Length: 312
Image 1 (cartoon, one colour):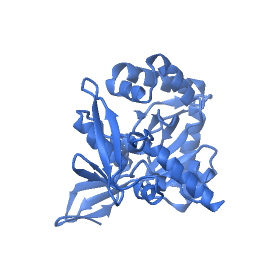
Image 2: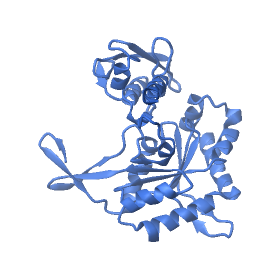
Image 3: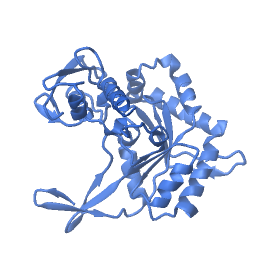
Image 4: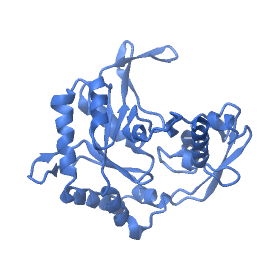
């Protein structure tokens, strides 16, 4: 249950697959990364000409991963619906013709959208290299990206047996008690999936992954200190360059412009929006630097190395 004043929101079922699919499309960057590009549904074919239409595709410029997206409801059978559907998609997307279609979709989006151009620029990808970078990413095996309303045991065990890496994200629906047309959705924090077979295959001895690390952990490990100042530079398209400062609080929050944020990403997007950008997401771990110019993501890596050395 979620409580907002006198309002109570209780968990509810999705009306249909289209409802959860709309939530994912509208909020794609919260699943696939702040530097991701979402590609809509497109017919792709196997070598024998059998067609299939995934719910979308996503290319994450930061991680150089790409996703075949299949949004599902748990009441769909794993064995009669989900498994054969994904199998056909993996066969179809492996053909050069399918990957060429996706490459051209991205190039067209880059040509027509300043927002897409900004994503390449922020990842320091020159315009002359755009096609090569996209082709290289599409040359890798895709990750099966599956937002779903519940995770069954069969689904989890099936996902762990696949050759392709799989990420499962949990999406929940809530309706106001007594006013069911008032709806809220819950989606993952910091792009965190419920299941990530990439992480499972490379699970560290400490059992801690980067998803688990908070700023409070960095403070406890003496990699950050209360009162430390972090900085972030940002210049929106057509705007002026600005530098934002965040002060680390004792409990691991960031104080930016008088507001406190637990998440580095929310702290960063607050500054970016203040600068005049309409962006909805940003990876705060790769946005904020300490006084020595070290990114929070680098400090997080140092923390994980410390934990690994402690168990060796």
